[in-house]
Image: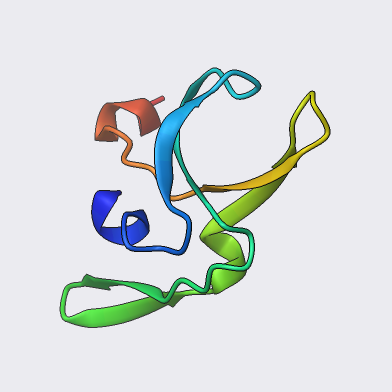
Length: 77
């Protein structure tokens, strides 16, 4: 996730109590160009799918990264 978010405008990595986890937080107007290459094909990700906005308990709005690494075992039923 560092490769996606670390260079974004206003990028910071820290714990967000409202979400109970560590996340990359970026400026809400940061423009991120992300794509994944799988099997020789490139799949672009729409910029609106790379971050999500949230309003904290104090009323401030922040945008955090939505791309995550998940183990394959989490998808086994």
